[in-house]
Image (cartoon, rainbow, N blue to C red; front, side):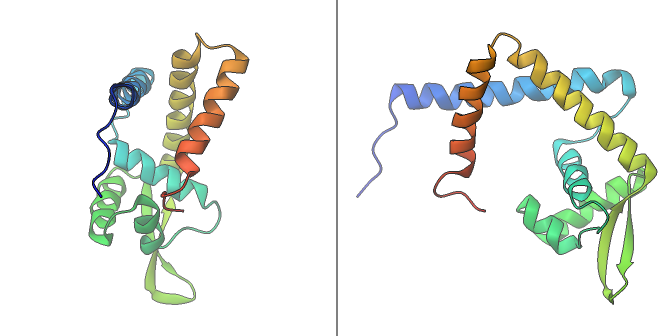
Length: 152
């Protein structure tokens, strides 16, 4: 049975989500311009993922899984970030064949700047909303992100 045609409202919502994502990226870039931090969205996401692991650096395979990409794509991202001094590859102490990725001091300071820019961009975009509207939006976004059919 074919899927029903999207309604005008569904199409409109999809376009609004795309426009909002682009606006968020532009606002975040604006907040980073003075820092001369030009990272691609994928590189920024990789830094956030590595930072999320804290004291136990993730394996390359863990990062690939979280990014939902093939391991080769992670290698390319790590190469670029390693060239910039933001991450380094380290052997796993329990299995030297396994490579882990850890943040350097530069990577940690970059991650702090990226988080700060993201918060500032979100605050700028969400400024017109009341606290109650932000709560509703947060709930709706959680439903969409964590809803059925999403990879966990």
